[in-house]
Image 1 (cartoon, one colour):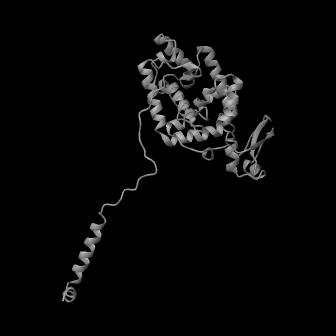
Image 2 (cartoon, rainbow, N blue to C red):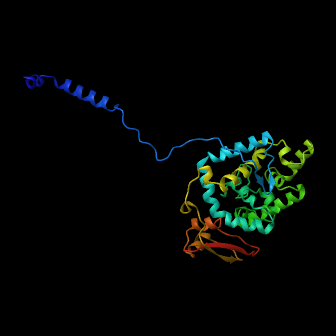
Image 3 (cartoon, helix red, strand yellow):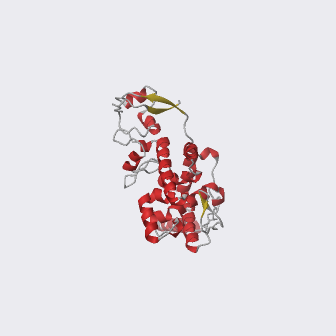
Length: 300
């Protein structure tokens, strides 16, 4: 009898009942799938001692401790940028480190290049260019060729040497690597002016604009984080790090009328050629003076 009665139930009612069941079943509590790892945000312990280029930060002063804490937090929890810094450092620090050493510049200054550009050939709104963010006129003063055809601010080795010259001048002027680093950001003249106005003798007693005021703290924080990357939660393996492709160098003392064809003669695309020689800014090299240039060719 019940089967007979069901046959007389309108079809629309049957579909309505089925739809209601499907809708309500989607809200049945399901077991929670736990992530592979828990993610937590922690306050960071400020070290009792940190130095920049062998010069200790006065961490017994409250404002100094807070300013360092800010940079530690910002650079620890900007995880994507942190991992990129770690990966690029493995590729480019081996080029920068021996040049710093040859000029007698403390190794800590490689982190200055890292915070300036992220170890990329960027150009700022002010026109500062390359890994070391060198302005056009400053680059020329330091012996770099800077024009529309050739811009050696994009040349890692040459721009590193130019930055070393500037840092040595600043160190001689101020007697402090910390002030030399600040002057790299603000300029020797501006740091001298602020020191005279405020009758201050060191960086940590100066009231500066926000960028320069954060500058040494940021360098020191990035140094501390990258030196202790695993302790700060950055997990990676050697295979994740960037490496520089093996290359050889050729000397050119003539013009190159067509760099695209020149690259092809070495079985390279124009893009690959430019990756290794970004200082060549156009698709030709003028070289009317017959200057000798060193061109880097990746080994295939």
